[in-house]
Structures are given as C-alpha cells and as structure tokens.
Image (cartoon, rainbow, N blue to C red; front, side):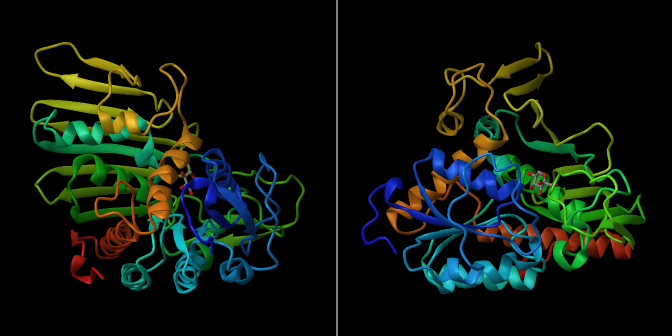
Length: 392
Ligand code: SOE
C-alpha cells in the first residue's frame, strides 16, 4: 500500500482481466497518470484484446495481485461469474475496488458486497460508464433542474449484432460464466442504469418478455475474445442456448413515469447502439451512443434544437466530464477516463465522499435487483416488483 497518497501519480493499481474492457481500463488509468503496476488474466481469455497498449507485468495469479501489499486499488474486469468473489477478496485485502458490471450474478451476493464495502470505508465503484458521456452528465443535470418538466416516458434500446450468427461465441452465452440473463444483464443494465440516472427515478415494476433467437450455437474449442468473430475452420461443438438474445421490457418508475426498452445482441447492423429518449411535460431529450457528442432537445411550440457537445453551452456537470474541445468527438474510451477521474479523487482523499458522482456497489446491487425482477416477470408473465427490501 502506498504510504501517503497525495495525487493520482502516487496510486498503484492492479487490473484483473486483460480482454477488451480490461484494456480500456488500463489505458484510461494511464491517461490519468495512475500507475498500473500489475494485471492478471481472467479465467477464460485468449490472450489480450488488441493489446493497444503495452501490458503491465502479469501477476502469476489473481490472488497474487489481490494480496500484493504495494497495490492500493484493484479493477475487476474478469467474467461475470467471478466478479463478486474477486471484489469481496479485494475488500478483504484492504483494496479500493472498481468492478465491471454486473457487480455479481445474484442479488444475494451483491447485497453482501454492499454491506462489506460500507463496513470497509474503502472506495467502491461499478463501471456503468455510459453515465460519463459528457452530454449524459449534462442531460441528468438539466432534467434535475426541471428543463423537461416532469419526466413522463423513457423509451429506447440497446442494440448490437456481434452475437447474430450461430458461429458467434462468447463466455456470456454460457450461464455458468455469464449468469442467467445475458443481453439484459450485459447491456440492458447499462440502459436501465442510465435511464434511472438521467430521470432521477428508480424503476419499481417491470414486465418482461425474453427471446432466444439462436437456440443452438457453435462453441469453438478455444475461447474467443469479446467482439472477436469466429476463426474460420476452428474446431467447435454445438451447444444449446437458453439465455436471452433479446428482450422487450415495460417499466414503471417511482414517480409514475413509464418506460419501454428493447435489448438485442442479434440486431444486424447495430454495432453498439444505446439510444435513450426521455419525454417530460414540457420537453424531451434524445441521445445515442453512436453519436455521443450530439443531444437532441425536443420542444412543442418552438423549433427543436440539437446541441453539439460544447463546453461553452453545457452546464457545469457536463463540463466537468469533458476534456476535448467542441468538434473533437469524445467516445467510449473517454467515458472510462472521466469515470475513473471521479473515483480516484476519492481514492486520493482516502475515503468515499458523501456525494459520489460515480456509480457505487449500491448501484450495482440495485441493478441486480432490477435484473432479477425482469427474470421473475419473464417466468411469470406478469408485472413484478423490484424487491428493494433486500437493500444491504
Ligand atoms: C459486450 O456486450 C459489451 O462489451 C458489454 O459487456 C459492455 O458493457 C458494453 O459497454 C459494450 O459491449
């Protein structure tokens, strides 16, 4: 553990998982001047995704990295089924923890994590990075200030096509590593977290219909990387798939607002498109992750507006999350930088601040409660309540 942490440059970090997202974490940390001193391979990866940056020294094991006394904070970017156990071990080793979503694969394990994190006094965060596109920070503050009036309807989708073919494989398809719900827990969780962040309202009831459109897939002998297509001619075996390629979900929010969400990882032509429209009693906002520097503002009785991310035109919250001048598009990788800048301000301070601007384990647990309500509704065919009585 670093004796005295006075700035980002003093912080020593380890990253578990050097796949696609693990590399995004490593590069974002380095942009902030934070020392990434070690990495450990997850349990299913083949090599590293792209290796767009030199890898830090690879620890002999995940345990060696977690127990390294010189490390102050650990990022968990391994497959979903080991997130909770690894995060819990990090807390036990006195490390600040930044965990990829989902925080766990059951609400029971995420409730235990919230309780342990609160007892530890350590900084804890979950990577709902979509919040940290600058225009989403701007939008949330505008909605909170009443720019739309009272939110009434939140609609949208999160659409991808990287699992369209029966030869597309990823550990997320295997329920033992990905968890029971797949498209909903993997990407639907981003939309649900963003919708609640932007509206300031919690989802309280859900009605869900899940679909498996590709019932049998070819599992290659060697585990491919996330977003890596199949190696032609590689040996594979047929595997029956039961988790969700896509979902249609109706939502009721605490303040009476309603929502409609479509999730799909088999939507040909949509690569990584999170779209959200929030309508209110006097106006609407619309945003899409494939054009992240553009915010649509809908009006009645006056022309609609399009805001291009511009520090001179955004509120303070939006400005705080932006680093590039107008016209220099800020994208996916930049969201990790802005999220980690907020998290590591607390690491430098030595404790979680009272008003955290970043998603914590409590948000990761709440996301699990919503996900489990969606699973119950898909099974029952009825509206199901999000059971927040389980709050840790
Ligand atoms: C795959 O669906 C994935 O990498 C998700 O796991 C990420 O959370 C999302 O940001 C991009 O797509």
